[in-house]
Image (cartoon, rainbow, N blue to C red):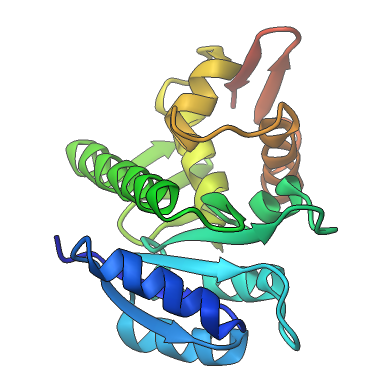
Length: 228
């Protein structure tokens, strides 16, 4: 196993705990003590996964995640939040920022290894599925470029957070087909991730803000479909 993981956390004991347990499993671990340093290291290393603490002095985890997601070279890097119980930041806020998953502190080593392995399996499955599909999915005025992780609307390129991109790509893969909510959840977030019912709705809302309300149609009590 040679997956590389960047740990961004201001608590040294947390970084030591994670590094020790993950290196035993064959992961390649690097560390950063704050968001700014983490951004620099992520650009230099392009890790497979970033473990990102939510509550950090200066640039917190939410802001750091948003900046990481805006970097094109990190489009295939998964981001998992480390969040303590009782923190003000909600699960929805983390997913809105572009996170792929979260792990709750205090960290249990066996659960940590299991969760990270599941996240990286999802990444591998998504990359394999993407390579089997055409590089670009074209639907009239909206186009998806999977290689560059861009969408184009009427010739104007946009960079979307990973989950928004995957959600739109799923809906556009079969125009006019109604995708049930559980199908969307399993396809975009994976069966190993437990998220709230509002997560899909939040991502749909943000997509509509960017591409317009007309393209994504709500089918009440069922799910969503793409129309153009």
